[in-house]
Image 1 (cartoon, one colour):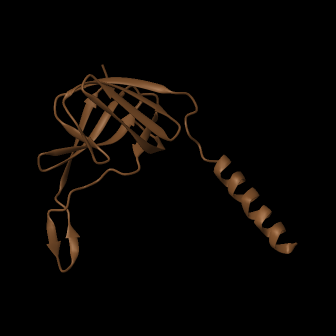
Image 2: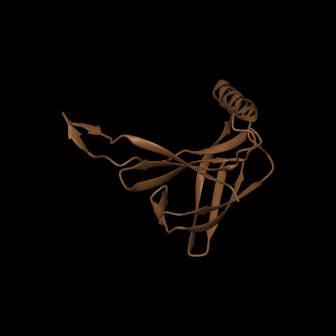
Length: 137
């Protein structure tokens, strides 16, 4: 009986804890022209105009020649009035990292990969990144 009680208590605690996570409830859409090929998770997407819809923990990108969906986390941004997409550039590769609404909210991708340039002493060495921002249309 005590095992069932503690299992129920643990489940109630998890639900209560997750209920307090702040995330924008309504879907937000951003449209941007991306002049370079880029990756979302491990999916490569070509340059083009993309419609990006973000809601709670998911971002969906739709373009003329492809699309992707990825998991995100809510992000409070100080970039009011600056809606758009933020990419990290490693060498010649671009990786989508954030979607900003321009209303002080946004989403950060949970799995934004960074390529490994090589290994030193068994530890991965990552090249320096450049942040590239693309404004919304």
